[in-house]
Image 1 (cartoon, rainbow, N blue to C red):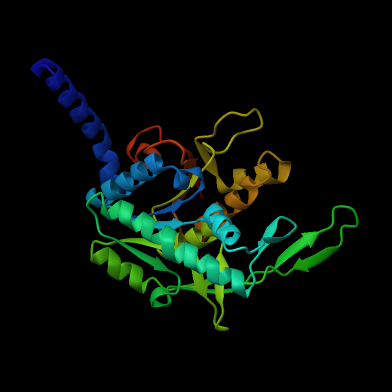
Image 2 (image 1 turned 135 degrees about the vertical axis):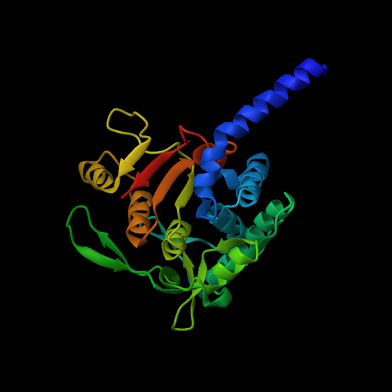
Length: 299
């Protein structure tokens, strides 16, 4: 490569850094919680890009915290072990035997794989779950099913599926001061002595709320929220999101995700972003560029 070409590349890189600098300063010493899941977790190339993004956030003076899911990996392991998955109205029932496998996969193999990826980028990541340091306590979740014909309600027993009810930030604050990156699996104990599997979105929202995070990023399989005409929305207020749910603009699987976003904001998160985890470096594009990369939901 000629010196002229090299100079051009360096100049372009300098321009990118100069453009990103004001945004880096905006998030300096702030907490950003990232929920990692979806297709990005099954793609090695996207996984490495994700790890580089998290490492760069730390190197930029930001306090990143990763919360991850692992539904497909759990299903694969259950199949390997000859365990049949049981569902109630589309929701997985987690019995006492299943929750042991869920904990093994989430707090074990998946968690350590993510930790290793971030460490390979030159940072110190540490794998945790809600049990560590009594970080999160959960209670049994109760899901209500409404029959579409009779409109009668019944409670669905999902076994050891929980909701976070207490978050202690002591350990997370200690790790932030120690320059370590927490990677957290959504498993938590209950005061009743049982172990509970928690939806990763809900878990991430509870963590972000307890830390009054600057941003909570949901890496999903979609680019963000669309309006009635199918147009991408760069920003959405909580009141607008609630109206969109009522009128059906937001529907299906996006409803619980948006509701989790709203709950996180009500807990004290400054802004929640839904962005596409299938786009490499979407985290950096969201935080360090003017246009962003997803839909920002604000109070």
